[in-house]
Image (cartoon, rainbow, N blue to C red; front, side, top):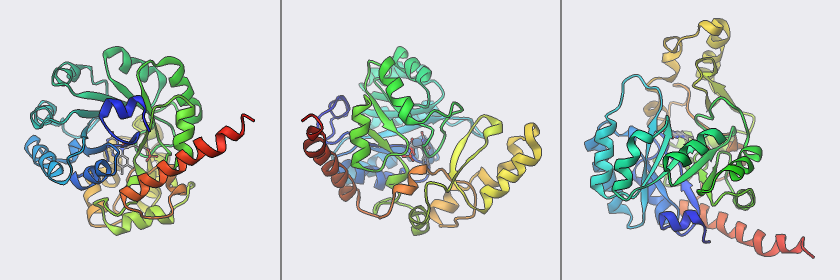
Length: 324
Ligand SMILES: Cc1cc2nc3c(=O)[nH]c(=O)nc-3n(C[C@H](O)[C@H](O)[C@H](O)COP(=O)(O)O)c2cc1C
């Protein structure tokens, strides 16, 4: 399939794997890129710029296809070494960066000078238009369904994507809630040039996470995610568990007086325990409503091939029939 996104990133299929904390290691990104999509290493999961440079080098050993790096600008306990991470990306020759969170304008000139294509993840039309106006090459439009941070507007993709299509001239991908070829075709119909998936890629053979995480995804339904940190205006969609229930009880009890310190136990530093040790009740971890559509643990190649074959069959066989 050829779209503005496949052309921009030099990939075979219009499928991107979004940055994921403690999931987006070299193994994940290389598996997606080898399968013809765009794999993304999560920059901030690496503790230092040197670590990121080593992770990029490791990924290069596993694939000769293009891959990218995610840089997330969200509130965190200590400010990461962004200039160092960006230097590591540029020096390594990576040509795709997925930015997320705060406006990336400050970093665009240096990235563009290095010939890097920047796709900014946005949860609203106004942020997408802003990203376009400051010179981002593409946008990942992340609907309310998404795993991770859906923003505070609560607009699902059925509305958000066609609204983005009304306003944007740069290409965008549909992100949040996507798992199959039907949705890829729907995304294309709504004006997107491809899809971005997070949660779906965790339930793959190559995802470098504990088996318990993959099983939790298989066992969950579309009813099992919760929104946390809403009172802090840092909303995150996570899979429900005992820690999340505890956190939500604190949010309810403290109301507008809630502070980050009150829930630190449930959210700070929990990713290694969950993703690597498989201690599923250790805290809250991002997960999309799309868990309801995930019923198997294929390889990334099988997953992407199945999505593309399904999309191809719908476009060729099902849709033309409606024109008769
Ligand atoms: C476990 C997990 C961790 C994530 N971590 C990040 C992150 O560090 N930075 C980021 O920009 N997005 C992060 N995301 C969001 C994804 O990149 C992607 O936008 C989102 O998962 C899309 O929604 P979906 O899960 O419904 O496919 C994360 C998502 C998950 C599921």
